[in-house]
Image 1 (tube, rainbow, N blue to C red):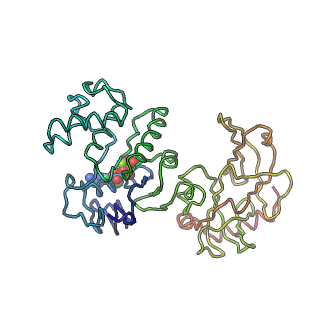
Image 2: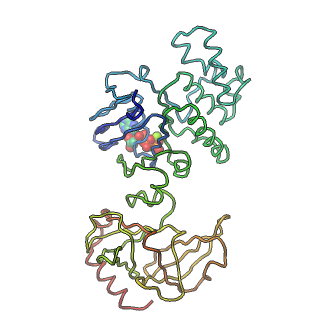
Image 3: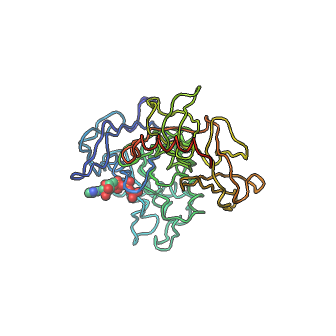
Length: 382
Ligand SMILES: Nc1ncnc2c1ncn2[C@@H]1O[C@H](COP(=O)(O)OP(=O)(O)OP(=O)(O)O)[C@@H](O)[C@H]1O
Ligand SMILES: [Mg+2]
């Protein structure tokens, strides 16, 4: 197969359960050897998307292609795809070797071949010598490895993993993340990995599809998704962001002048369609939020420091704004912070902010009201 051709393609795929529009116009090309993650909150359609790739579910509209071929008529067991389920779905009464051997037994492979392959697979997932162990006597992480070995023995071209690390404690989860990633690179198999844990997605993936309410909001590398979120949802869901509702007040050099109920600011435009008067959201990461005791050009947002929260590796400073909302600033030492009760001027490098058109907010607020509030904030002192 041509290396440049996607191994998995979803073309205009939509899925309805009754009236429930669960997957909305999904277009996704997954390349051979890629580690692609579907990331999104509970109920956004991740499992449904995986099930359409594996063939356990059919798209209502659109098509799924594997290796360039429409697989509409091909049942799950004939697709070159295997799934590792969240609950592992192991056979509790069989020992480890019999669980791993299952796929080859079903295909009636010779006993000697099965034995050899099972040994190879257990070595691969670092469970040599566990052949005769009962599943009930294995730890969570070990069961996880058995489930992966059982899927890999079928030599799938694509491995689908549905929240495979969900049941593990944090430490083991971190360890398995590294192991899985190494295994994937070593075998060169395409992984389609599902998680709702953004940190997990950022550390493991070649590319991430961020999904909300059945819609891919952004499909990009972890770095791009973090640094250049394409929508307000992505900015909020990936990492931590201060999201400030504002109104676009016109171009200001390379940047956008925005007015908030707490004063004016400058920001970087993420959406080229933004026009003066539009309701927007400005996203600023807590580590990029700056403050000064002196007034700052182009910014007039003041706040009062209300708390310092010790987080171990950093300190979070909470700042209360005029309208009651809060802003978070991350710093590494107490000496980089202002004391509680201090009035400060907030600002940021416009290049380190992102501005999105705010559709949902637009529905519930009148821009005219906000414009009045902005004028008032500009006219009055804190
Ligand atoms: N067989 C089904 N029949 C009807 N509705 C379904 C079915 N399977 C899923 N749904 C609905 O489709 C939506 C998406 O479900 P899905 O399981 O794909 O979400 P998910 O992103 O995997 O969520 P989670 O992170 O909680 O596993 C949900 O609203 C769910 O209730
Ligand atoms: Mg799911």
